[in-house]
Image (cartoon, rainbow, N blue to C red):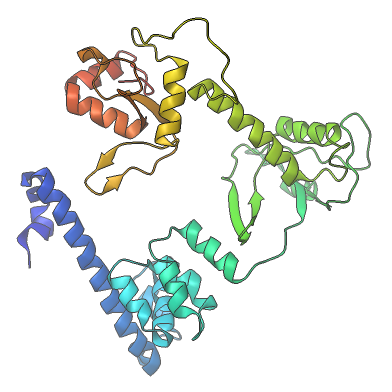
Amino acid sequence: MDPITTADNVAAFATLSDDELVERVKVLAACERRASVALIRSLVEFDARKLYLRESCSSLFTYCTQVLHLSEGSAYNRIETARAARRYPKVLKALECGDLTLTAVRLLAPHLTPANHGEVLATARHRSKQGIQELIASLNPRPAAATIIRRVAPQPTKGDATPALAAAQELEISLPTTAAVTSPGSSTGHDVAATPAPQFRAAVVTPLAPDRYKLQVTLARATHEKLRRAQALARHTLPGGDVGSILDRALTLLIDDLERRRFARVASLRPSPGQSTASGRHIPAAVRRAVWQRDEGRCAFVGRTGQCRETAFLEFHHVAPYAAGGAATADNIQLRCRAHNQYEARLFFGDTLVRERQECGWSAGHRT
């Protein structure tokens, strides 16, 4: 056994260089995959022999959770993967080399057939959970989901003796695309304005088909009223008040506005009476436009394994730092995600200076 991997030698990792630690993490991840595949191979035969019955368990799931002490999620993933591997041995090879995860196999298993499993497993290679769900939607397309607005029951406060009454106020209404939309000023028999709960759940996006998604989201009352108002105003072009179409139009306007303000993106350039100059820390609009288009709205940091894929929290980064005389020109400005912008700042300025700047109110969105 490698002494550096034992519990008594965890501190030994601190003695490794950066390159050594990177390689060690990769090796250990590969070892973990091999161990998981070995366990799954054993579970294939263990399940076939039903040895869990001899061990006083009524099911393999019970054995995994109560005897092997796996979590319920871990047990479920491994059991479903073992049963898929029994039918399609290619699953084990894909797991061992890191092409697929246990979650990916568990999600794909019900959709694999003798005819399609080779192609599906190859297509699923290195996909995220969202990507796997999209692949499943292409294999088994589902019809568009009905638009539903449901009033969330108010959460009872401590000492509130009327939780049943709050639950009884829950109201669910289906809005087919052909239904008429009521304007906010009119009175109806049902009040469908959403009552915001103290904590909103994260939105859930579920692929239904290659070009359709189901969105489940909790809205505040004010947001719900804006939706109703938008439906009313758009009735001349969207008589049914389709929420998906309203959302598409709203997002198009929002993206255009954000890109215009953040990256100076415009549909057409107006002639400028004078030449824009890059002076000081200010980055001219023309430079921001050029950088955004060149870097394709993505972090341009390139590491040992390729370019960063992040498209959120993007900032403008001086390749030659401004503090070292770097100019705000397209050749010297690149897009960076916040993490890599701060990473490069630490490489140049050092951890101490960056920490001091942050403690003095240095913005996380500061352009280096």
